[in-house]
Amino acid sequence: MTIFCSHCHRPLQAQSCLPTRAKQAPSASRPFRSTKSASKARRDQINAELQALRSLLPISAQEKERLSYLHTMALVCLRLRGAQLFPPGLAPPAGPALGTELLSLLPGFLLVLSADSKLVYISENVAQVLGLSVVELLAQGDTVFDILDGRGGEEVHKKLLLAREEPGREVTFVSEMRTSKAFRLQHGGNRVVAVCGRFVALSWPPSPSSTAFLALCTPIVQSPTEGEAASQDDIFQSMHLLDMTFIDVTESVTYHLGYHREELVGQSWYSLLHPEDADLAAAQHRAV
Picture: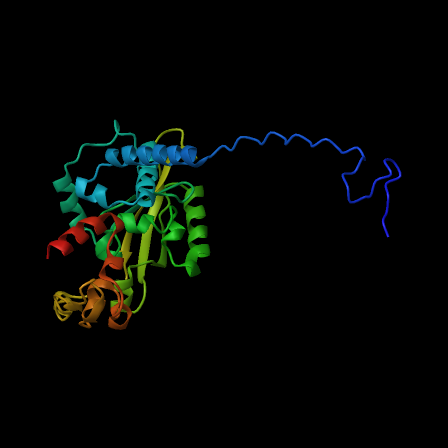
């Protein structure tokens, strides 16, 4: 049976006489704009600014090279808060040798806080008390509560409020402070520190922006004696595959690096290095 078209009376298999719709012109596609180059430009600008800030820090060139961007920003913020409270023109001149000598005579380390409990200054001898450098402490946070054990934060907050309401009144609080992993393994926990200080108005009339909490932080549990420290192995030895994977290491590595032997076996030596030192270490490794 053949079906014919009612218009042209031709079989439908033939070319149809029905009007066909004109093909719509394809809509012009929107131009694709890549944001990759813009993002890279922003990252490069941020990196350049961070490098410029790092170059202004009053530390040695070797220390600057080891700073990550996070540590750089933490140190810059610390210096800015310190410059706001203690303008350079008002600070008494003091040589670095005198400062180091005085710090070595203290039973603890010095701590300066702003009115809102922000860290303003931590003396360099904090490493002898907590096993962490100033930079490592700043990586914990920018307030005093970030370097304290969380259990005593509320009591410390009350003490600081009391001292801020009555400038010149001395307050004392005892709390655990965060320490390095090696310190905790050696001593069984964080260090208990007695903080004794007062709020001091640095200008008149006093205001929150010109008031600082000056304190001496003294460890309650004394550091190990020289005889106890000497009982630890002075060095540790390790064996590696050609790609520097640990295959064995002496138990004394725990005292120096804070890792147990079982944690290191099978791990790459490169994973323990600072990222900025990896290229130099790889070059020396290839030379061997």
